[in-house]
Every structure is written in structure tokens, then in C-alpha cells.
Amino acid sequence: MRRPKSETNAAFREEVANWLRDLQQRTGLGLDAIAARAGVGKTTLYRWLDAERTDAPSHGALVSLSEAFNVPMPGHRITARNFGGFAEAGVGRLDAPASEPRENPNQSWWRIRDRALELAGFLPGDQALLDMSVQPRAGDGVIAQIYNIEAGTAETVARIYAFPALVTRSADPAFADKADMIDNVRVRVMGTIIKLIRDRST
Image (cartoon, rainbow, N blue to C red; front, top):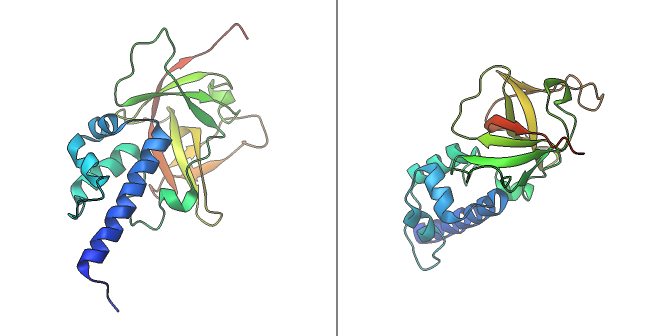
């Protein structure tokens, strides 16, 4: 039996609200910063979290957020809730170094944690500045999200952009010769690494 439209609307609104909260948690950004990065009105996002409202979220705004953060839209069979958030084994978010200017909404700092790109010059402990507004070119370092649909897991990693794939550059057998095809479903590029800082005191 088909549910009344009002119930369907309410269920979708709840899914969108959960999706937005998960996006906040994974990015560490507030609603204002998320709205600015996606180019949508911040009041739109606040309305999505208002349980008293009954109007359906705007499809256009959802698309803008999905594209800005390289995440599947609510209702897609691969959603953030299916995966319980992203593991950050290969890279991890960190605050901007004190010596760096205040980050803009399109940029975030990440620490390289593994040896997946050691032969490309990205070493564990390096601090990488990611810019989501910069389109990667062949050979650029990028940060991506890789979904394992069968296992129900997802991870955030650093890779080299070699369209139509992302590849590793490592002497470590655990990472050697890995390639993941970019399909924006299983593999999504978040942005391009535009700066690297290495602490030479360690």
C-alpha cells in the first residue's frame, strides 16, 4: 500500500537531516561553511534540520551539496549512513598549521598516514592542503573517498590522479600497483592537493 505523500515527505526530510548531520560530522564544518562551499543559502540548510517544517528539500540544493563534497545524495543506494561514516586510515583531517593563512571554504588540511604515495613524494606525517575547487590534472595528488559496497565500508585516501583511475605509487607491497576506477559512485575525488608541508625535525 502506498504511503500518503505527507508521510513520504516526512521520511525524506528525516533522511536529508541525518545526511546533513553526517556531512557536518565528517567534514568538521558548520552549516554556514557547508552552505558557502556548496553555493547554497545557509537558511536552506537550517530549514532542513527544522523538524517542524513539512516542505520537501530542494533537489537543486541537494545536487549542489553532493557535487561540492563528492558524496552521494540522500536516497542513493550508497549513502553515508550505510557505511557509518568514513574511515580515515590513509589520511586524516587536521587543523591548519599556525603558519598558514586561515583556510577558505574550499580548502582543508589533511595528514598523510600511510605509504601509498611514498614514491610520488607524499610521506607519512606530511601535511597536505586539499582544494576542492581545483580540477586535478594527470599526476596530481588527490584525496578521494573509496566505497566497498559489498563490505559496507568506506575510506578516505590519498592517491595520484591518472584518469580514468586513481593509482598508488609505493614500494610497499600493501599498496603497490593499486588502481581504482573513478566512477563517482565507488570512487569519488574530493579535491586536489595543492600544497605539502613536511616537518623535518622528526
